[in-house]
Image (cartoon, chains in turn cyan, purple):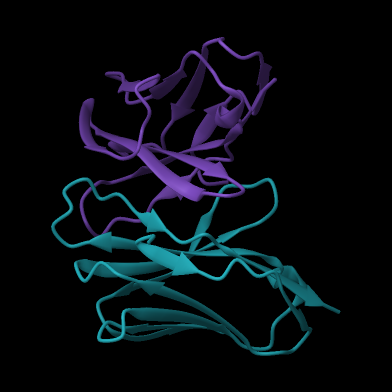
Length: 113
Length: 113
């Protein structure tokens, strides 16, 4: 079993839809949770960053972390064609001196005009 | 532009050969991370260096090695290449530690024929 599980999709939605992306994980030591966005042929870029449980909002994006369920989500409101990309969740332990991130498989999102 | 520079962008080589991938981190970042991205495995952590020293190791094959030089640039050496080594290799840099964001380069696409 992978440490981080993410549905690879692909996920196709119409413009303006609310998108929900999710990851589950098995390592209870994870405390830092991130969402990266990766456009085709580009490197991943950080979208959202959350420490421990709770919600964080940034414009049309909301990240949620439920540590009791080992479940994190990213919501995209009023989705736009420019949001079409692969979304990767990533996690890190607190006492991991290496600071390495463990990534999910990535979910490919397509927003149709 | 993340500020992380990777060369070469594309590389085609034959089985059994050896290649070197190069990474220049963002100005001021002391940590360099190497990741391998393939379609079936997603982003896999290979190795991390912090200020010239190896800090963390992932599932890096013995045929692969890396180093970080005094000027903080890093090289990933892949030897005795196999078809299965074909992938995108990403370098990321960051401040190191638990809370820092990782900034990714645009990757080096390796094709082994």
